Amino acid sequence: MYKVGITGGIASGKTTICKIFELLGIPVYYADDRAKQLMTASKVIKHQIITLFGTEAYFKNGRLNRKYIGSIAFNDPPILKKLNAIVHPAVIQDGHDWFEKLKDVPYALKEAALLIESGSYKSLDKTIVVTCPEEIRLLRAAKRDKAKVTDIKSRMQNQMPDAERIKYADYIINNDGKDLLIPQILHIHQQILAESKQNG
Ligand code: ATP
Image 1 (cartoon, protein in one colour):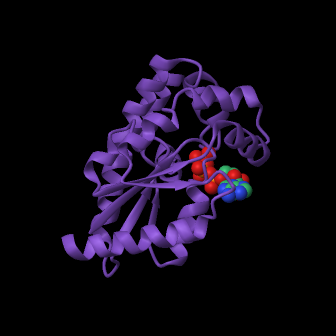
Image 2: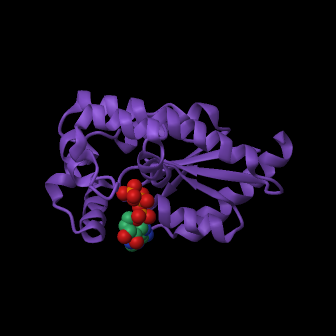
């Protein structure tokens, strides 16, 4: 299976773009969503998270208290590092299993905000980076999440800037709202189809 990663900063438009790839018939593994699911579903991960954050990390009904965890982790880099060390390897393994099960598709995508930071990109064939200026991402995230700008900024500080991220890119999609998305996606889709045929 030809594996392609797609990443970008907070509110850069990764999910929006992946939905278009899905319309083209390309399966997408949403690593961040899956991470949240595993943090509730996996007993081993749950136990490790409670050890790190205390029982307040989960509500009585078993749901993850994301706000509580986020308020601590995004303001305490060593704790965030420990949280990532619990969650990232589990998601990388889960994503690997997901790719292995796919059949009859030319390639598949893995979407992750921390694709590069987690080292996950190393096990993929190509990487797409979505870029968008920080001011626009802040506005989009604030509108979407109804979150405080200061909270979004503190999350952004834990991610690498676009200038660093594009060093890892095989393809770049500019989502600043001026360049049209669909032509960029179709162009990359055709290129990946050609490459996956050559290498697969
Ligand atoms: P996160 O990593 O924070 O989950 P993301 O990278 O997946 O975000 P999206 O959720 O796709 O980003 O987009 C963020 C917000 O910006 C959404 O509300 C989306 O509708 C909006 N958005 C994305 N692309 C554009 C665009 N080209 N023009 C206007 N709004 C956009």
